[in-house]
Image (cartoon, rainbow, N blue to C red; front, side, top):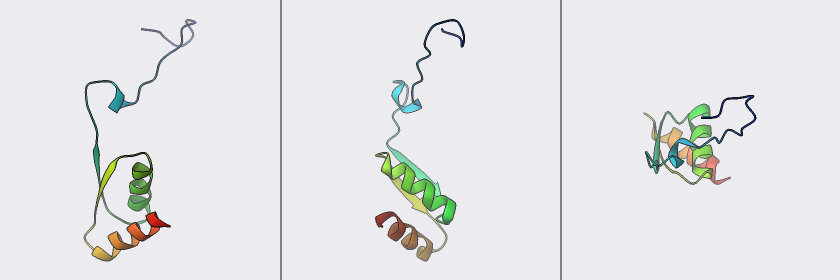
Length: 68
């Protein structure tokens, strides 16, 4: 395996591309500012997102934010 500085390029793989796991769905708990932002980012990268919060209004607001 190559080490930094030994002249060889280091290949960085995304965890879902290493053949050991297949992530298709991601769950986010909490639809506030941070949770909705995380959910939007994950969805923009092609994953199926399940967003959960104790209040339905928060989830609806997060979905509306994502559609804008």
